[in-house]
Amino acid sequence: MSLLGGSDLKEQQKINELELKINREKQKLDKKLTRKKILLGAFLVDALEKNSLDGLREYTADNLLDFLSRQTDKDLMADLVKELKDRASVENNNEAKIDSKLF
Image 1: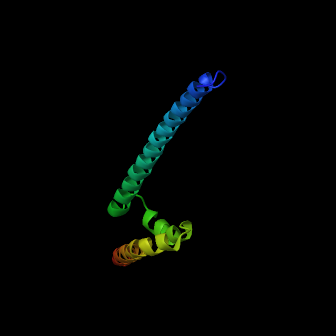
Image 2: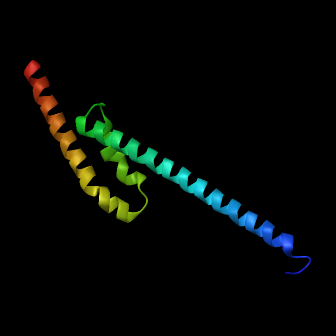
Protein backbone atom coordinates (compact mmCIF):
# COMPACT_ATOMS: atom_id res chain seq x y z
CA MET A 1 0.00 0.00 0.00
CA SER A 2 1.34 3.42 -0.86
CA LEU A 3 1.75 6.19 1.64
CA LEU A 4 -0.73 8.41 -0.18
CA GLY A 5 -3.41 5.86 -1.13
CA GLY A 6 -4.38 4.21 2.16
CA SER A 7 -7.24 6.50 3.12
CA ASP A 8 -8.43 6.81 -0.48
CA LEU A 9 -9.32 3.11 -0.51
CA LYS A 10 -11.36 3.45 2.68
CA GLU A 11 -13.13 6.53 1.32
CA GLN A 12 -13.94 4.71 -1.93
CA GLN A 13 -15.33 1.77 0.03
CA LYS A 14 -17.52 4.14 2.05
CA ILE A 15 -18.76 5.77 -1.17
CA ASN A 16 -19.57 2.33 -2.60
CA GLU A 17 -21.48 1.38 0.56
CA LEU A 18 -23.46 4.63 0.45
CA GLU A 19 -24.29 4.09 -3.25
CA LEU A 20 -25.55 0.60 -2.43
CA LYS A 21 -27.69 2.00 0.37
CA ILE A 22 -29.10 4.67 -1.96
CA ASN A 23 -29.93 2.02 -4.58
CA ARG A 24 -31.67 -0.16 -1.97
CA GLU A 25 -33.77 2.80 -0.84
CA LYS A 26 -34.66 3.62 -4.45
CA GLN A 27 -35.77 0.02 -4.98
CA LYS A 28 -37.95 0.19 -1.85
CA LEU A 29 -39.54 3.38 -3.10
CA ASP A 30 -40.11 1.89 -6.56
CA LYS A 31 -41.80 -1.13 -4.96
CA LYS A 32 -44.06 1.12 -2.90
CA LEU A 33 -45.04 3.14 -5.95
CA THR A 34 -45.71 -0.03 -7.94
CA ARG A 35 -47.85 -1.41 -5.12
CA LYS A 36 -49.83 1.85 -4.97
CA LYS A 37 -50.49 1.63 -8.71
CA ILE A 38 -51.60 -1.99 -8.42
CA LEU A 39 -53.96 -1.20 -5.55
CA LEU A 40 -55.40 1.79 -7.37
CA GLY A 41 -55.85 -0.34 -10.47
CA ALA A 42 -57.62 -3.05 -8.45
CA PHE A 43 -59.89 -0.41 -6.94
CA LEU A 44 -60.78 0.96 -10.37
CA VAL A 45 -61.36 -2.52 -11.81
CA ASP A 46 -63.72 -3.23 -8.92
CA ALA A 47 -65.57 0.04 -9.57
CA LEU A 48 -65.80 -0.82 -13.28
CA GLU A 49 -67.08 -4.33 -12.60
CA LYS A 50 -69.69 -3.14 -10.11
CA ASN A 51 -70.53 -0.06 -12.19
CA SER A 52 -70.45 1.87 -8.94
CA LEU A 53 -69.68 5.23 -10.53
CA ASP A 54 -71.95 6.56 -13.24
CA GLY A 55 -70.08 7.14 -16.46
CA LEU A 56 -66.83 5.46 -15.41
CA ARG A 57 -67.26 2.60 -17.87
CA GLU A 58 -67.99 4.94 -20.74
CA TYR A 59 -65.16 7.29 -19.82
CA THR A 60 -62.70 4.41 -19.56
CA ALA A 61 -63.85 2.85 -22.82
CA ASP A 62 -63.65 6.19 -24.63
CA ASN A 63 -60.26 7.30 -23.29
CA LEU A 64 -58.12 4.35 -22.23
CA LEU A 65 -56.64 3.53 -25.63
CA ASP A 66 -55.78 7.20 -26.23
CA PHE A 67 -54.04 7.33 -22.83
CA LEU A 68 -51.78 4.40 -23.70
CA SER A 69 -48.73 5.15 -25.80
CA ARG A 70 -47.33 1.72 -26.63
CA GLN A 71 -49.05 -0.32 -29.28
CA THR A 72 -48.48 -3.51 -27.29
CA ASP A 73 -50.34 -1.94 -24.35
CA LYS A 74 -53.17 -0.87 -26.64
CA ASP A 75 -53.38 -4.39 -28.05
CA LEU A 76 -53.42 -5.80 -24.53
CA MET A 77 -56.27 -3.54 -23.41
CA ALA A 78 -58.37 -3.72 -26.58
CA ASP A 79 -60.48 -6.63 -25.29
CA LEU A 80 -61.19 -4.79 -22.05
CA VAL A 81 -62.25 -1.65 -23.91
CA LYS A 82 -64.55 -3.69 -26.14
CA GLU A 83 -66.13 -5.39 -23.13
CA LEU A 84 -66.66 -2.04 -21.41
CA LYS A 85 -68.30 -0.61 -24.51
CA ASP A 86 -70.53 -3.68 -24.83
CA ARG A 87 -71.59 -3.47 -21.17
CA ALA A 88 -72.26 0.25 -21.44
CA SER A 89 -74.33 -0.33 -24.56
CA VAL A 90 -76.39 -3.07 -22.88
CA GLU A 91 -76.96 -0.89 -19.82
CA ASN A 92 -77.99 2.08 -21.96
CA ASN A 93 -80.43 -0.13 -23.86
CA ASN A 94 -81.89 -1.45 -20.59
CA GLU A 95 -82.28 2.08 -19.25
CA ALA A 96 -83.98 3.17 -22.47
CA LYS A 97 -86.42 0.25 -22.20
CA ILE A 98 -87.22 1.14 -18.61
CA ASP A 99 -87.68 4.81 -19.49
CA SER A 100 -89.98 3.96 -22.39
CA LYS A 101 -92.14 1.82 -20.12
CA LEU A 102 -92.52 4.70 -17.69
CA PHE A 103 -93.89 7.05 -20.34
